[in-house]
Image (tube, rainbow, N blue to C red; front, top):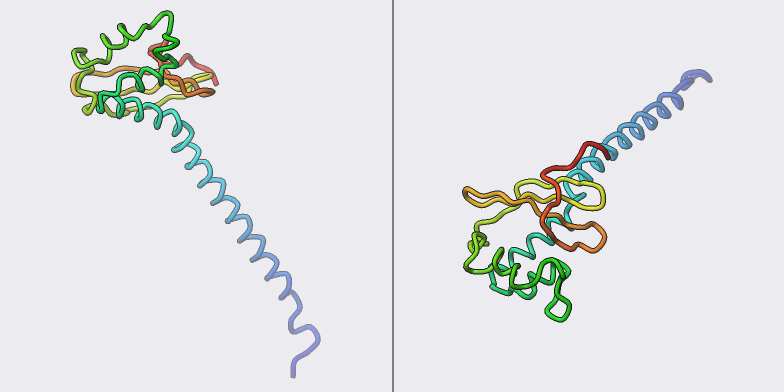
Length: 146
């Protein structure tokens, strides 16, 4: 015959199990969120650089130039299309656009420094966070800070 106090504390054990599960779930979610943030925080900028090289491979130089925020109707004052073609065209040192791949990204203030590499060559591009325009990186690396 079961007594009145036979189940005393059973509710407390159940409550402890629930709390442990909730804490464990919260810790796992924080870790997963941190990993996902680390992996994808520069995704948009990486995708933009990949688009740039895809345009170069397709020899669609006007579209590639457009990703620099420049158009034939409104060319960049300090980077006209003729200079762009010297840097990225079929006769340039970057002519083999298929060989390029992203090797590293680093957040830096209002943009991301994207390091791209090909055999025996490495370049650093700057991608502005706000509008995803591409340019040459003004810095060899990001200064210390946030």
